Image 1 (cartoon, rainbow, N blue to C red):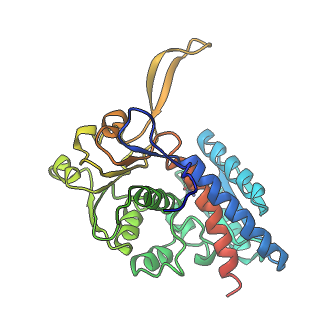
Image 2: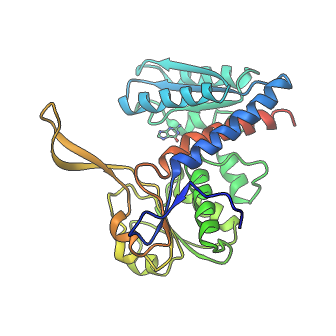
Length: 313
Ligand code: GUN
C-alpha cells in the first residue's frame, strides 16, 4: 500500500461502508484529460467536441451546458449546435454528416431524448464510430462485446462506474476477477455495457431486470452490485451481502420534507439503492448525488481525448 491518503475513498464515522467520492475521482480524471489534451495540442491536434441539442428540454439544456463547460476546462475545442424542436431527421443527419467530415471535431454527442418525430437510432448510427464519444453506435457496442477495449469507445456512465468499482476494490483489497457481480437493469446505455465491462474483468456476471424472478435472492449472492434501473431505492439495504461493493447509477427525484422559500414542496435525490440501510452491510458504496453522476461527464471528456488520440492512428 502507498503512503498517500486515499481522499476519494472515505469511511464516515459510525458507518461500516467506505464511501466512494465520485466528485473527487471525476476531478482526477478531468485533470488527467486536461494534461493529455495539452500534450496532444502541442503536437498540433486540439481535441474537439461537438454537442448537438434538439429542442428545449430543460434537463438536456443543463446537461449540454455542463458538457460544454467541462470541454472548455479541459482545453478542448468545444462547439454546441442548438436546433429547434421542429428540426427534421434529414436536417439533423445532414449536420451529423458535416461534423463527421470536420477534422477539428473528434467527438460528436447528440443529446437524448430527441423529439418524437426523429428516429434516434437512425441519427446515432450516422455518427462516425470513430467520433462516437457516447459509445452508442452498434459498431462500438460490438467492439465492447468482443472485448476489443483498445479500440472501443465505451459508454460514459458504465465506464465511470467501472472506475469507481476499481477504486472501491483496491481500497478494500478485493479482486474483481472471479467475483459474483449483479447488474440490475439491462438498458443499452448502462446495464448491457456494464455487464460487458465486468465480464472483460473476469467477474461472473448476472444481468437482472424487471422480469427476473427472486431479485432479492440474486442480489444477496453478489459481491458486486451495480444498480441501474431508475426506480428509487428499489434495491433494499438488507439485500446487500456483508462486504459487497455497491455502485448506484440511479438518480431519482422524490418528494422531500417541507416546503422551499417559494412555498413549493421540497424534493431530494435518491439512488436505486436504499443508501443508509445498504451502508450498514456494504464494504463500499457510492452516494447519490456525488457518486456515479459526476463520472459521466468526466468519462465523456476522456472519450473525446481518446477519439482525438485514435484519429492519429
Ligand atoms: N441524455 C441523458 N444522458 C445522456 C448521455 O449520456 N448521452 C446522450 N447523448 N444523451 C443523454
